[in-house]
Length: 150
View 1 (cartoon, rainbow, N blue to C red):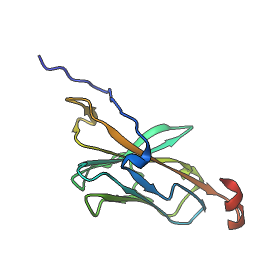
View 2: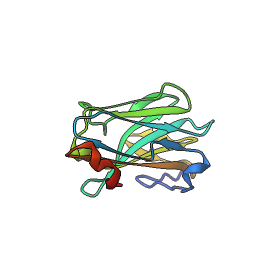
View 3: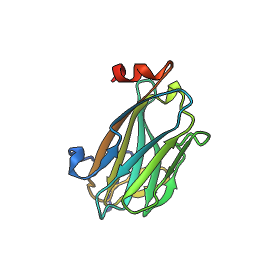
View 4: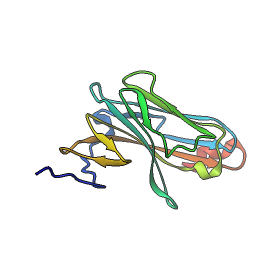
């Protein structure tokens, strides 16, 4: 009998310095500017995920890469957001132009293996995800407020 975990994810949380690096760690920008978030993952990981978390919408999956190819980008706001994975270790998420509603915590995660089927993450065995967190704030006003915001 095969047991499947539907809609259930087992996560092993570890410190960001254990392998997933996201730069910059925080960013404050004005409405209309362009922002590029960069994520570097552990060598050997084959899956990369970008997430966004806000108070209103909670945690949202934006895009999922497997072996550098985007497999599911249904969560990406396609008019201003774009993501790519040009190498096996690096991915970028670009927002252009930024809007106040883009203020959020952006997370990059990597994993050794997963199976994506019918937009549900099915796990055949526990998989550890390594997370890195990025905070983005889009503010209205002049750039001199940036230093005091974070």
